[in-house]
Image 1: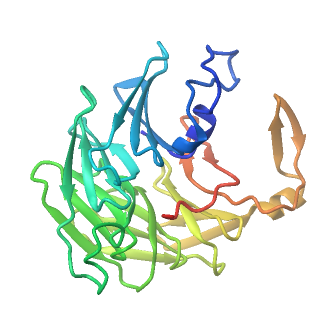
Image 2: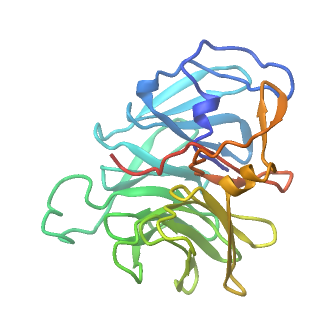
Image 3: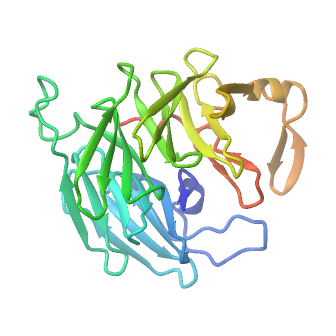
Amino acid sequence: MKTPAVINLLLCSLPLVSGKQAGKLVEYGFVSPLDTPCETEFHPDQLDVAWVELIASNTILRVNLTTAEQKRFHLNNPAGLPSGMEFMPDDNLWFSEVVGNCMVKLNPKDGSMTEYPFPWTNILPVDALPAGIRVTIDVAGNRDRGAWFTSVGLNAIGRIDIDTFKYSLYPLPNLLSGPLNIQGGPGSTMVFSEILGNRVGIIDVHTKKITEFEIPTPLSLVQGVTTDADGLIWWTGTGAGNFGTIDVKTGKVTEMFIADIRAAGKSTVIENGLPSIGSSGALALPGPIRVGKNGKIYFVEGNLPQWPL
């Protein structure tokens, strides 16, 4: 159960506070901005425990939202830097190391970690470097017994079998596509964004067939992707301030611009519990996007692409 970027609201560098009134933001813990908190995951059977990646401090943080207890689990690789993560069918938390060139399995019972180094070498002349060239950004799964990930350095979608730990690699059809975020897609597919290719792609977990969909506006910097209950893909374009849908059955791609919605007076800004009509022409920079339990679509604004630094 993935909740990216929201951790910047959930875990702030503020004193620990108890729950507030319903509908208000609840803050937990004291996390330094130097920790760089990013993605948050919840095991579907333990929704009162948040697992948070602290990128800069090379740590996975466990927060009990009932007792407020916190515990940090440091990566074995001192320069690994955790990236996208998700709980898989084996009940373990899987994540990638941005510069460590491996996938990691974390046992939530004790926080122990097992690393599975990438087998790919000699891809490029500088591939002998110990870190970085095969940079992975995001991890997702729960469509089969695999942890699927985006690999910017290899311009490919990768998979590790969570039972045999065997790796597979599926290069993208176009060069310099920049695969970024990945989520479960319609049916038996995984959906991913291509921030440089200006496309959204899907890969069937059984046939391994890759299908790509062009976003109409150039340089949209496609970032967020998610799939609703009807199998419709929703995406965001951080660069163009747009978002839209993709129907994989018909191939139809739609897009809307946040600036247009604001200019038409159809944007409602909620601040301090009071609604107002937002008409700002500032670029919204939409980022990660998800479907809420109420069926509505939620996305982050003011989010820059999650690009490795």
